[in-house]
Length: 95
Image: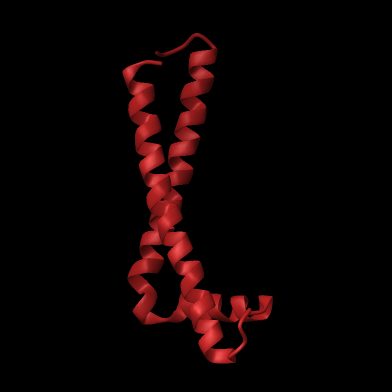
């Protein structure tokens, strides 16, 4: 494994950790809001969808929403780049 591969792998792992942390925080926020709204200990699927719609429209959640969408796009781009580099390396191309 060369230095470039290590840097890509570590960077992708850090971006994934940030994405996963924000995603879990968002899911727990959905649950908390739905429990407060409905009073039920276990929210329903419909409650999740309702909270998703609220989160997508709520101006107070705008920064988290933008950060999550940005990290998602970065993660997809990094995975695509990694796949292209791995394909080139397997074909005997760049190092």
